[in-house]
Image 1 (cartoon, rainbow, N blue to C red):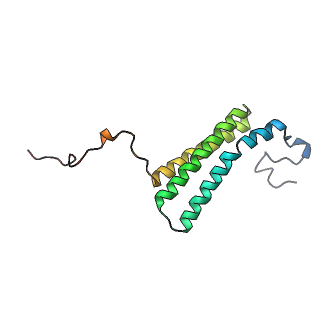
Image 2 (image 1 turned 120 degrees about the vertical axis):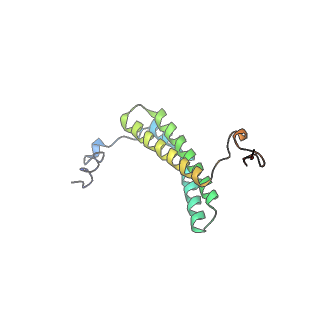
Image 3 (image 1 turned 135 degrees about the vertical axis):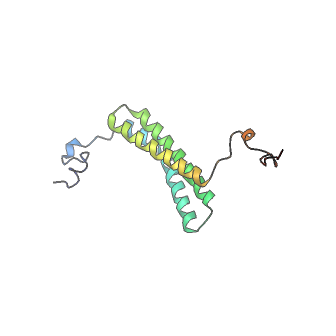
Length: 129
């Protein structure tokens, strides 16, 4: 008996119950390879910067890049099918993407979109009347 079946009901003991890999599924997975490779490469690059004690901003940039790739994977998965398992996996991937981008933005803050809200020069100093 499979010890993981009670924890993860997705695992089946019967070989005939495993999903069949169709040409369509293979093409869908193949279309995601670029995004999958990009996310993996970004994480590896972030790890290399951490090991080399590089800049935090560079790590944040790689996290943002990875999050963007994960978002692309999530969108691709949602386009596959309306099957519940795939939709849940896509939602989890989207959440991971959001968290990765948020972590990256924390480490590597993006420039503000409008500079009108930030004071120029010494205008932030209150003048005494």
